[in-house]
Length: 112
Image (cartoon, rainbow, N blue to C red; front, top):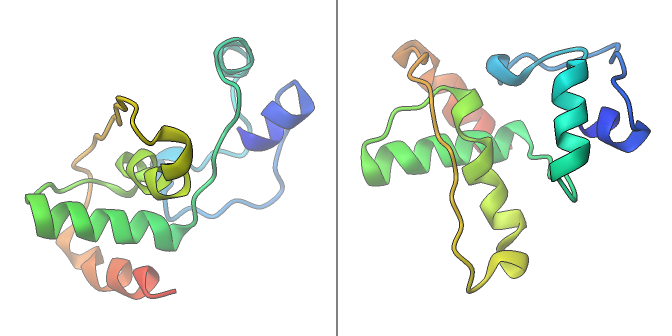
């Protein structure tokens, strides 16, 4: 979506990382791109490590189990902290499509 936002239209990416599988798409849809251009000022990207740290923090501190695609909004908070200081912020977190067998991979990725 970041590339499509920058270009002003959907683009097809040659390589995508599938760790955050629910958000790993090679091409954003036409309608989604149109809506994003109309309502967003910018798009913030987060790394797999930032997503994994958020997954672990939410699980350890709050007992919330998310799939990787449910955590990028929380991971972005740290990157946007100066911009959002003193404001009301809502992060949508979702998805329980996570297998406990992935926890070692998530912990490893969080260390990167």
